[in-house]
Image (tube, rainbow, N blue to C red):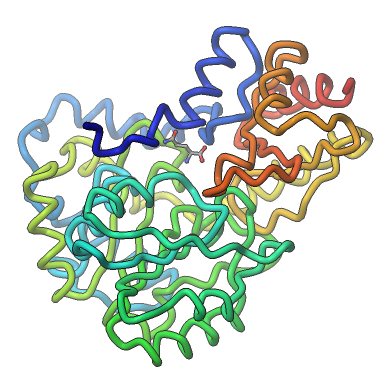
Length: 375
Ligand code: GLN
């Protein structure tokens, strides 16, 4: 009997494979197609000849843990004990899986929003717990009243994703006020804050859970170097948790991966000394604006995009097909791959919306837009 009877290949795998098969421009799965910073590749090339090929310490290469703590101090003015409150993970995916496995027990309830990225539900189910999906409002704002209605004595964790994949929505100061009011009423509920797109926000600044002192004692913040440094294939990220939770998280981490690949850790530790992480915001804002301008005269209606490298668009003026069918036809007939938004909903809600990834070089965006404008 399957432990995960409803789980199949992820939509990102399905769409990327289909794009490859039909030689379509792939704006579906989120990954950049432009070159990685040469300063980073030069560090890797040099380190390949040095003694960096054996196991790293379980929680991470200490200089990297210290530089992550400094990055968080510089970005959010939060002071951390690098050795006890930071963990290097095999991407945010493993950070999330490890956290849920370590902290969630059978019959616990974990509240997640709908639509949601796909990696939260499986570890919740494997822990014997129950995912409770709470819909965002129509404008993708978080509805705190509905979230509160979903809370009860079984609620063990709330997962937020800020900036949000796929909608590009970011949480506002009023969201954090509501969140803190709610968690005051539920002192045992933990917060898992997935902030992998933390450095990709546009008009408004990202508000990290790191900046909220009230939350520190029960919050796990998950980040990804894959997103921040255009290296999704390296599968390297980190999480921050207070020591009492981190001790439990490490008990799982040490038997899930033991430690994360050493040459990547040493490389990123060096790279953090030279990179200006704030620059990625400007680069992606230009990409977002350029991609939106290219689609201005198309029949797609573009939704607001406050952060992430995803643009959601309505195709209701073009077709009434389901979003899954529309995405398939977009690949086969028009040579562009996108992600149907219904796949982020528990009940497959079809709003005639699709998601494009604009983390692409301008030539790719131009070629894709030319095809999309023909629809
Ligand atoms: N996070 C990526 C996206 O939303 C997908 C990563 C993956 O395929 N696991 O497109």
